[in-house]
Image (tube, rainbow, N blue to C red; front, side, top):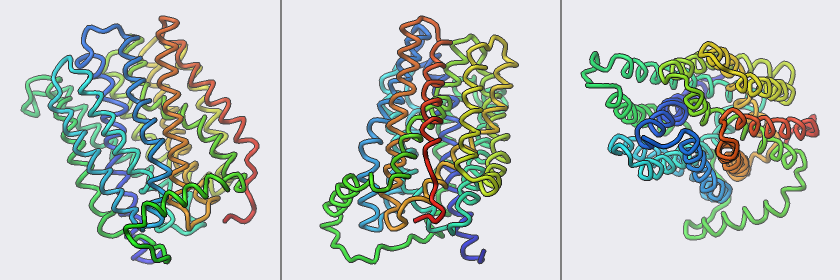
Length: 418
């Protein structure tokens, strides 16, 4: 790899380092805790779980609607980095704004959170689309895994600092853990903004050679989307994989977003749950890199299938948990497979789509994933409400993983990719 390509690759991966702080500290960690214990103070645990599930699902609906259209527009107008900047700024500002939400104001917290999630997931459409610009075909698995590895390490380092702030607030000049959690939202916003800079400076976007007037870019983007909707069934491998991905990644994302809420509902203390998140992050760092090599050795599809089976086992383990140490065991196994399934799914999909329509097709990819997140958290919330027992909600995740794994079996990768 030349020095120029190396600089672009590292700069691209640093965006994962930047925005993963939101995924770990906010989505997976502090927002569920603060939402249940501060913004929804006094509400029944099943009711707060339902509210959190609906909030995640609402964000998923919005980004699912926007994703393919935005991807098509970005492809036509060579605006991937511009759109990434817009969504990243939305995420940064809304995350920082959570600092100002007072106790009991769960509605305002949901609005800011939904907008921040839209910034996070919307930006990832264009971040993913830039993968083709920084990695050759034979290195897609490894570079994709590098991004996730950077994400686990960067997100884990900031999460560790934020956990220390909660455990020892006085040492940081804070009065209590509530103030520490509020300040953590600000640290995520600053971290996200700061470490996004290398991508915007060093990553070069491959330009669409077709000349299109700016005034016609949006119309052209919609036309491209319409054409792709009509012909997508011609790309059978892409079509079948997207169905599979829709189901199994929903199970994965639901675990990421709802695991801490689930642990709180079982009566586990917040400090133990946050420490388990740290385990996931620091185990996920080397594991993501390892799965990049495994994908090159046995094929990305086979490696993805292995991780789905592992996740099914994880959901059964979580149903029977009674002790905090069991949650730590759960965290270890999630850390081992989470980065792998995310990185390999992205690289496998990138390898089977037309490269000149990467933004649009990755818009579909993100649409399927985020529209699936509409289903998972809401299902968990509904099952918890109907049964009155949050334990049964994990089987909604099992159901999604089984369907995704079954459909993946019918994905037949071509010997020569597009």
